[in-house]
Image (cartoon, rainbow, N blue to C red):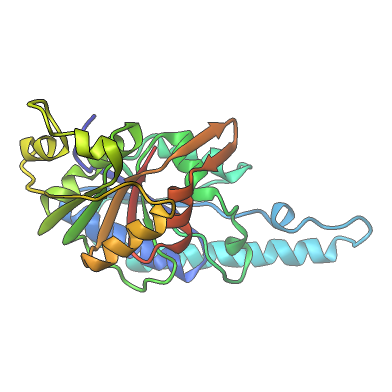
Length: 279
């Protein structure tokens, strides 16, 4: 797997958070010499709020006009914020359901920049609540998810890795390597027996893996894994004043259904810092 960032894919919609995502993605792309594609994906008027039988066509037309207005607003944000000289492209999705369609386009990106599901107004805020995790599960691509409440998250200076030996965490760490190299400090948090056993012998461990990639990290081995791991993880990241949390997105994919594990669900619901996730 390549550890370079050359193509970022940003979820575009008409919410104020799109400007946040695009601006963050452009700053990250500028640091790594990457290009950015903004992919507009918003529920159709009929899918978001179907017209009941007998209501007539007037309301449907009004809904379609509102959706056109939101699309134009999002495109305007893209044109205003795209940096001069940076490879930047605009694309739109008109297939449904949205998550599988978005995941198909995500296959050609090194990193996705998505947003935490949050409250709001307009068609764009009627996105499926599980859009982020479904895109991650179906595409297999890593995603950097920005919190709904953060106005302008900075580029990561202090990074926390939630380490649990397994596919999800390993893929997240590999995807984060370009970012980790530019960080001021990297901290590893791990819990439970696996964390205690790893590194006791002469074989490789997460610290030596990062060291081989030119990254020095401090490993914080915690005790037994708590039942409320997601809450504890966010609390420890806050204590360490982290700018980014790197973790595996754990769960099970069945066709278009994605069932999250407890820690992943808690983090995506309560996150207050950017989170880089992979499955």
